[in-house]
Length: 443
Image: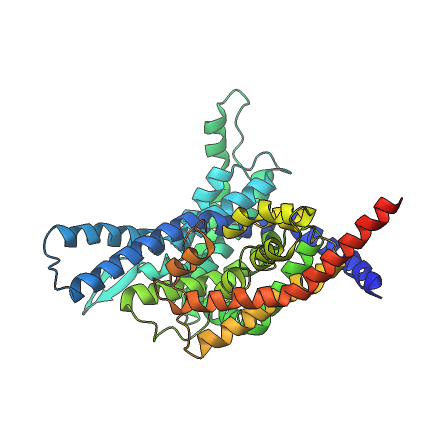
């Protein structure tokens, strides 16, 4: 029965995973959000320094009029730029990566020119007038450039790359002799596609404003983002995503790489909004939603996919000293403390191991459910910092929590629970491995 179940999963899940991995749009989305991570990490950490400095210096009665105030302003400036322009980064990155994929079938596509066209195109859709008091001035508001503009920026980046690639391959381009240097050739070839793309999106902006919407970004937020967020960011969605990721990993397929292209566009803006709220207010009270990425990427996956750090520690405790399992545990401990669990996943192994199927898939789900209700009830503060993830697991959570201890305590409790949940399956694994060794020795 179990083997039939695995056969069905492999028959239907693997082809879907292969198609997703080969989808250029989804891969471009995933790569764009991964590329934005250094900017958001730097922005988040510098914002943490600024907010913590403002708070503690105020508590200690330290004046910020002198050197210390200027020092904190340096970090504040970095935070404002790095977090405030993440939407622009998504526009440029998504168009560049999608164009890079399209270039495989059309060598006339230039990813750098495409990303510049996308950047200018995004600006042509943004309202360029704001009211200051009673006067209307030419200016842009930052909400079009930060996390609020990410979804629209992603759409414009992908559409620009697609339209540009079609036009650059058509006969509606400026033709020059082959003797013309490549850079000049690329620039002239881009003129007509650039004009057409700008014309299309400028017209779209006018149509949207004529229909009574404040901007294209507002239209997208109201008609696309809001409905998708309603069904794609709650606890049921998180559970489904975790199960799919774990099933993919069970078959040796990198589940995160595949699923992140699908969910990042919905999940990351929520977390960035929480970061922004905390940095502006210094309070958790205005954060009313549980960020789905913190459930799936932090609490559900302690030590890597499957929350396997608990299993590594268990192996080191209960496995015989001379056993192969203990050797795997020793090799896996340090990487596991930094969220890397491939040595265990492929060394124990967990991949295609029927004994480890249930805990590997469902322990992360249990962690996510517990964390959701702990955060939603107010017992645990939300995570409000985006960091590199390269820190050891418990220190990582402390930084993510802006040095609040309730998330760390929850993390530790989940780790202990994971050990309890993995224990019977590890004992069964050790027993079976021992029986297999005895059988081999008898031959």
